[in-house]
Image (cartoon, rainbow, N blue to C red):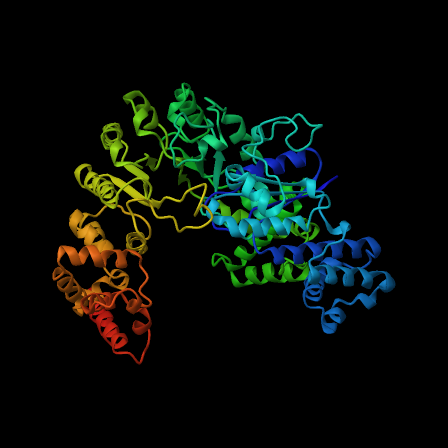
Length: 637
């Protein structure tokens, strides 16, 4: 049995690592021990060495329940204090002389980061995502190199690895795997399993503290690849061949049986409407329980977790999951004081108050005590609305009445229709109107900007969606998404500026989006206040001082915005041509270095960062802001 570690770097992301979930299934089918991790790397190392130490202690002397002393063992490995060592009680064992060298070894390995071969893994896999997560990804790969026995058994894959394999090799010395694991022998030459076709191991998501925003869902594909070849997209690199149909029902049913019912269905297809078997895909979705009106009834998570513990389906994950469920149980007000006392005292008795002392055996042993409480907890569960989401969006150019009629029969919410280019407006409008005519009312899209577009194009697309909401009484949420190149300069950061954009415009859009929480929905008056009633007002907002945007109403109230606006009006065309490039750079720390023109210096002074003054109790601007906030509060009251 091999020891396998699968790592996702500790960046923020909405969706779990589907590739690693398939790899987990593969390794477990081969009888290997698999660990999944996402979080602070030193935390993982501490937890791993602690678990090795406990297992070593148990192997030497099982007369003492070392698991119940796991928190003390961890504390000593981390800090190395004599008091922490004494608290473990190693001297209570007649085999103390054999025990303490091991805990000292693990303490040394944690302190130095240099692991012995007995502490390392036989295989380590690291997934990668966006190119602008370069730094944290490289750091994770370097960490992974210290954990694997044979550097040739460290595999790097995913989006970044497939797009920039040469760059990763140059930075780490590891040659990554490009694309999906779609061939026999991708990991083990002696095995014919196609990893990309395997079902997902959902249990590994319970091994980590990180909670993916889009959880409680089935994740799958019904197609792979895309018929388009958009210049800003990486799909052709990741999935070069379009696969017309991937059966769904068997995958969903397997997940349901092993991991319980999931509320939603997230399909990651890149262009599902291009499939000639689209109608079969829709029927599969319905057969899986996602037709209009279908309901979700939550599985008794405690019974599921204990069952999977008994079957040894990922002891690590279900120990953590059951521990969290018991924590939640203690907080429920539906139980009496006596019941809560029983829950707490039982947990205390069996070491279930701390994850460091919580064991599979204790959880199974106490099932008969806690099961009635969870039965009560789940007895009142009501059916919830289900949602199916083609999360990567659908292609407006492929809409037909037949396709939209089929979509209207499934629980799709929202329908995401791509609107990345103002040139596609006619097709986009036709797709929206066609969908509305078939009863669909909830829509969403990402609006790519900072690519080949002009700033005015972004405004027009946002405006179109706001107007459509008013015209048809529907909901369309727009999410402006800044373009980042996937290759070349600035692919490893977020500093790329499109040919029609500049730093000031980019920052202004981001400042406005901070106020709208990154999206634009229904509400004409709200939109016009945020982005302007016209393109001209919008362009003025883009060049407005950033602090005036962040504290819009306040600076308008005290007259600063009007003063800036009046001073800007005094500029001649020639002066604008000279001053605007200074503003576009969006660096106002040393305005005296930008110009000696007193008129320009006066205007550039508006661009200072007022946030420090606003939060300084000794500053007049702070006092005026407090008075303004009180006035707003009184008016709203």
